[in-house]
Image (tube, rainbow, N blue to C red; front, side, top):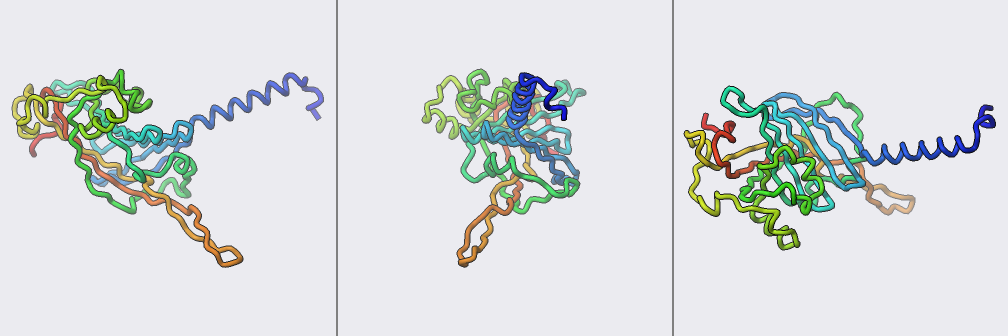
Length: 273
């Protein structure tokens, strides 16, 4: 009964504002929080976000050692971004935290599409999820540094995700060559000394001098992520079967990155025990 009291101009303005709010909300993508058990037995919460407009997925969680791990899959550019914010050892002269970024190619069927991720819901948010498939460890030699200011040629997400790791963004020579062949400028990459100048560098774990260059190893594991879509078959009245999406398959996968550091002080976690 109050509608007749509202001027038509205000009605149009309110309608426009509602539409704007809806567009902004849709642009933010969707978020899913999943509780998972880490390899050390601790429970952590993964935050998975899907942005179907930018065709990207992100996953973030905190490891048992306090490191914050962020993973981004950019489907538009077929690039994977791994970022680690590692707590520093202040008593040993390190900064409060250390940031690392690793870039690699995103292969087909590694993870479900962003539009499928955006539709995911869970019935019991308090349940602790275990991956259905535990995939093997992928070992990557990250022998090439990436220039942050030019990395937008690889993915528009790199600058925001890796800005804190400005001097520590790495990729492999194989992936760098692939991107160069695709037309990416050579100024994006710099070959690190481990292959160009010092092929016999020792691993950091056996290097005793904190100021010596060495080969550092950093490992992480994505404990739970939707890796494949499941399809079921329904039958119509004629008995013909038709496939339809009926769920997802979850995977767990580990990554081990080996890369050059100018001093062992930047790799204190990689020590012999």
